[in-house]
Image 1 (tube, rainbow, N blue to C red):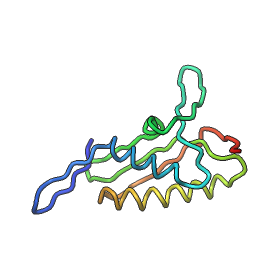
Image 2 (image 1 turned 180 degrees about the vertical axis):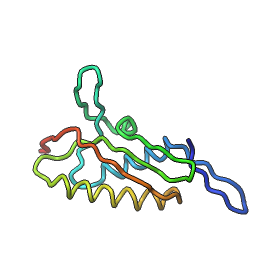
Image 3 (image 1 turned 180 degrees about the horizontal axis):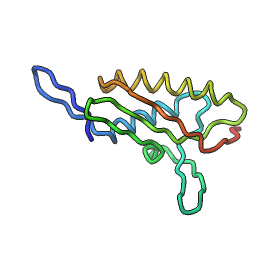
Image 4 (image 1 turned 120 degrees about the vertical axis):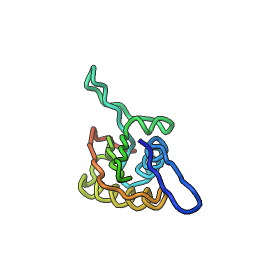
Length: 119
């Protein structure tokens, strides 16, 4: 579903894929996030996604009230506090996506799929 904004000048529709791309680029800027993850259902393997396929690790749902729910599947840096990284990710994404779209964030779910050592 698309998010919709209306005013006296007209109507703006925002596709969930656009929101996913923006949320993904915001997420990888956060401290402690190595990247988005894709989980193979067949093998159960976790794969780190490159920059052009960030949206495969993100799910965006926009309900009938124009509230956004975002699911992140992330890989986190070894040695950092998962709770601190998650809080930072939630705050940054919530603020930046709300400012970018003009829509309200209902919920952000974070699924930590793996841990990686960064050199």
